[in-house]
Image (cartoon, rainbow, N blue to C red; front, side):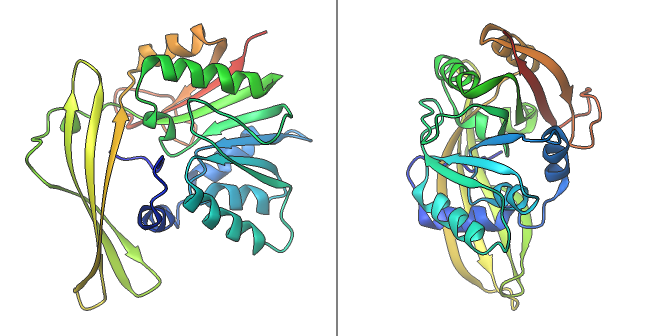
Length: 263
């Protein structure tokens, strides 16, 4: 399990994150549907290198994108600059718990994609974050949070083992990226520490580059998240198990929460 939030601003990790979900599109249609009303404005929290920002802007949406990493934001800004006719896009550099924007406007939709919420490790910081998000939402505004279901393989994994995670193609050089991770999970704190190792392999199978990145994440369970949203002033509108809009069930790997700001 990993997210792409990086408080330390690693340029190497930003380069990896820019390749991870390069071809992913399943979430974009979902966010566009949720922001379909006329005049909608989107607050994207944990924008990483701007994959979602770019596509929303390409559809003419007004987006304010936030991330703690200047390296990530630099890549995101360059993507927006290359668009022919982008929507109105602005950026803020801010840690997630202490969310601070360069804009003082209210947004009709806030999204927290790609498991970014899982980078917030302490329950009190989760509450602080949700209260801050609610402050930036319009009275009828909605919040969407994408997160992973706690995985027994991660929770019970051997902390001494380096597990193969996934391979993705690197279209830039015809090679691929091979991901491994070593993780240690604290059941009491619900916090995992993961060392992610990424090998850049060329078309001949030779490792030409290696990136090692340490990150921490917090697993939040279904009913824990339900009550967390409620006590922070949100009403649960729906819980989906994927971006196809299917209901969350025991087979789901993801939790996609849609919540409305309670008056």
